[in-house]
Image (cartoon, rainbow, N blue to C red):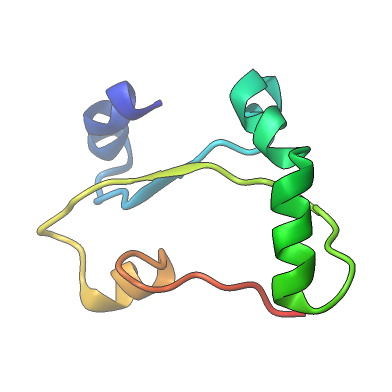
Length: 86
């Protein structure tokens, strides 16, 4: 969790740029409401030009770090646009 970030960096001995919370989003009622919102699905379908289908939802925290190299930041996709390949 974000509150444990400094402790985790000390334990691993390196900057940690992001923390991923796989499938934890499924316990959030607000996120589930967004996932199943028919208006958002309709917007997505019209934008994509086809039938939109939710595959997964991910949540992560990004942490600032002056010690991380640009290569590390690129690997963590920090400060970059995110997109999924088909």
